[in-house]
Image (cartoon, rainbow, N blue to C red; front, side, top):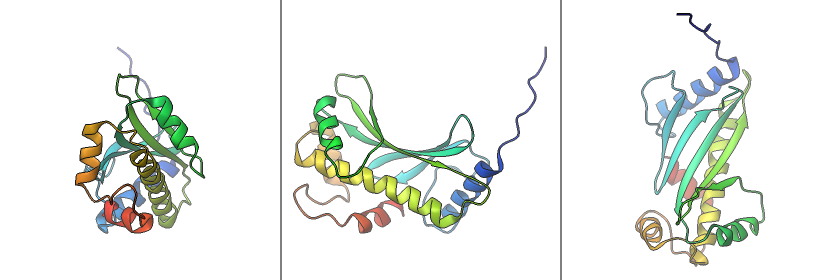
Length: 171
């Protein structure tokens, strides 16, 4: 029985993972592991479900935010594509598709903590803006609407302080 040679982890990923661990240590974010050598970890961003992973190529970190279920992915797609900025998203192929917003950030050994904070914040802000637009258009299932309404989010038709919500949700 032969073993594959161990592949070294690129310094950019090691650096980014260390910065995320530092942010968790500083209580700026909450991650779901105490193992500093994680390959994937959950990140607290209630009412959403968040996860941070390293790309297969080990050159990017990915922040995936599961928002909730929609009635019709084509209507949801129209709403998201009408937003004034590009959003990376995907839907599952179920009768009530599950919406996931995600961001990708290329990392190097020189990546700094503020860059990681901005990446996480911007991805969450995109998820919040998409969520508000989908709530206003009644695109979410009743169960998802109930979950989102019971949490920290304001009413769909009110003005949202996205910056304040991002800070509150990540901490």
